[in-house]
Image (cartoon, rainbow, N blue to C red; front, side):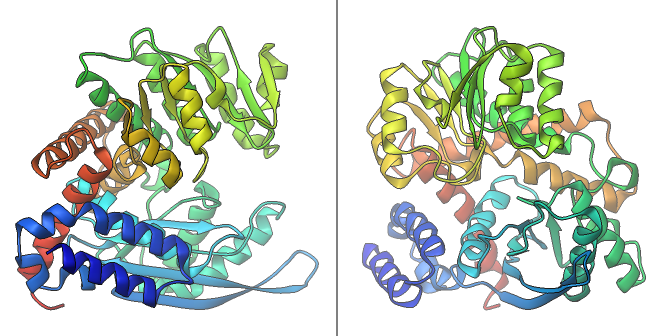
Length: 448
């Protein structure tokens, strides 16, 4: 059966050499699945691997729009509908100059397993555009969103494909997209987009959900060692919604968060980012559009380290919340030297492959984003349920449901890793647990 995986990896290398992000993600998952393939021949007989690495549908389109000076522009739009075995396609829209088909296929492929782990009825997908909302007026962003949705609307729906926000797509963009969707579809289908405003169908606690979720997951990891967040020093990168949520929940559980960061460098606050005023200021930083962590240091008299990342700081727990590949080999070596005991990813693919290989040889608790940052999509799934039922849960109810989901995700990953011979390896556990639920559904549904 390992030969089956080898053949699949060889085929992927032949077919997708130019799609490096998707290729890397696919091969990582396949390597994790070797023990599963060896144990059960049904997956080879049903050609599950061949089917799961190919999107069910890929949609590409042009997005023409006009700026405030009357000049025309054209961007590329995408939606990768990867796998619907468990439910409607579910995954974010990303507006960023780096967006291309390879990145969206990589993100959509990962989304299959992340959504599966939540236990909710959601398939996997991803979409977006190479449009850059930074530096654009709200009127320009609105015109772009309306043009983007003018094509996308015919391919989505609450029982078909449910996009959400991602990088470059926040509440403002979701609002513009929803407005255009209901105009074109001639229906207010509340469940077609998640991340909506709380006054018109959005879930309470959605902005902080990913940050809360990663801390809940890390809490379960620490508990396997008889430990907790109480009294721990925590380094967090970024200062957006994910970092803000992580700071709030870690502080609530008794930890002291000492760092946040931005493109300009990182802040070290020896007293902890722990007061309501400090935590609330992170939202002001986000809303300012300045994208500078130094603003916090200037306001509260904390240390600022220009051009550096926070991983040189002696801490017990490190939570990368900013972007992919922000934790390299030298970073994790420094964290290890300084005594870190846990690294739960809150951003997708935060850790480079070389850094992960190093971590696997240590006793540091490490979890991949597809498991530990699933709180965001889990809460989006709860938003879909609320829209369907025409009611909304209060914040504490959403928090309780999220906590339960994250505990269950941890349990699934831990047990899958142990069952297939790699105890403590949350990367293998997440891939295997996510795969099994999707693959079994694909077998049940036949050739489709």
